[in-house]
Image (cartoon, rainbow, N blue to C red; front, side, top):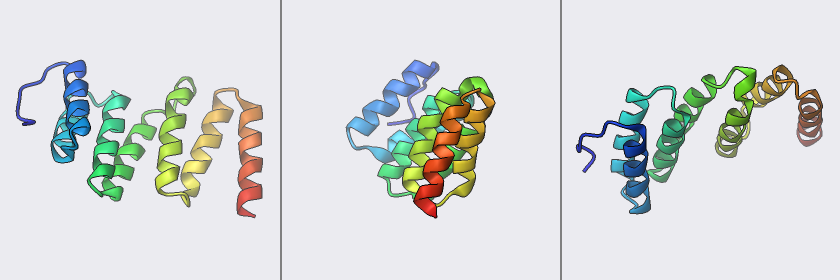
Amino acid sequence: MASVAMKTQQEMQERAQTCLDKSDFGSACEVAEKWVKNYPDCLDAYWMLSEAQAALGSPKSCIAALEAAIKQCQEPEKVDLALPLIARLLELDPLREDIYQCRIDLLFASGRTDDAISYARQLAQHFL
């Protein structure tokens, strides 16, 4: 099923989504993996891959895909792209101090100092 030649990001996204909608998670993973390989800067590809892997019951692979996407969002102007990825990763692995710190660092770097301080305080109250 996933062997159909696909060239554009939109085609890959539609194909992966169709596979997910049909609960064909293996094919969704195959398509999303090709999408990531062909378009490594496309965060949607990593998101789709992580969701397909989660549906397959592969949390480590799911987390790895999210980590790869987050690494591409380290510039302050990409903070709004990174936040949902960070939130999803923390749903799956809530004890990842490095990811909490990444969120705080990105908020500070993007000039959202009040948000960073507020989030750090929330974490302190939660974990202490």
